[in-house]
Image (cartoon, rainbow, N blue to C red; front, top):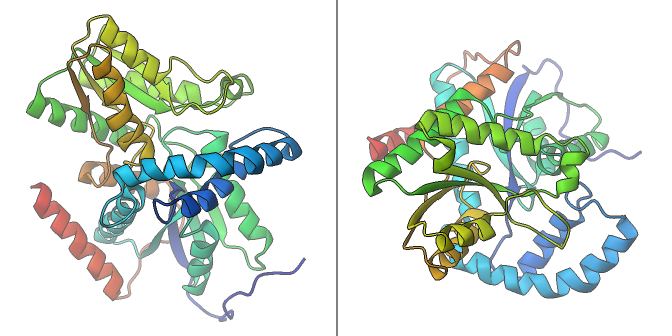
Length: 365
């Protein structure tokens, strides 16, 4: 096996610890060519589509990548910002704020972010860690609920990089944080703050990303962890079972997926006389195409067109400070036993990140 070119090894180099936040990914631009590249990588992952490779290759390249990129590009264009993809913007802000929070506790860490599909890639960020002398890496997939299609896929990419690397760092990863008290508290606070401004709905819809039903039968814990998150959030908000519903969005293909489905549920609620629904998406820690287009635009349209009167989308956690504090606590728990205290003066980058956090504190005060 040939190994990728690595930074020159320096004997006596002080070991450093790194934290790699990994989100799903995003195309580079809201264009058909960019979507074709992104979807080609995303949908070819055998963790995402569990169909025999030979059959799926012809379906993917013969049909899907000929038709879907243009349609998906239009959807991305509807939520694109001057700074770029919302998912990328929020993930970068979370990385900056997390670095500041960890630094304030005295942790001398390198914190980077990567995308499972798209850029910056997992491999490129792990290479950057090695160039910085990082010898221990905590990988944090930004998926609260574990699934083979998400969390495990991230680790597949890490291990694939490891196969091409001579000197491996020590590795740990976070499997899930679906029931983490800080994560649940941040979700509940975001909902309560929205209700304090806008009043309460007739029904709170908790929409999670969908997965094929067969994944549940094969032992994937995702469905169960979504239900746990939903129950804990409802308890934190003091809701009765009649006041909320857990649903699953983003179906793909004709196979049976986890139910109840979000869009038909919104339609049924409107037709049954529900005047107002609020929708929160606890499976996403950053707003993205699935929340901003599928829910805030298409979900709203479905509910209002079938008789509903008011639809409110509650944004994801994004750069909320209570959420980033929860993320900091998750990280520090998983770093236990690794040296993270540094006596060196903070770098210019660390100082910049602390300044960014100070600005965020001022903006939210």
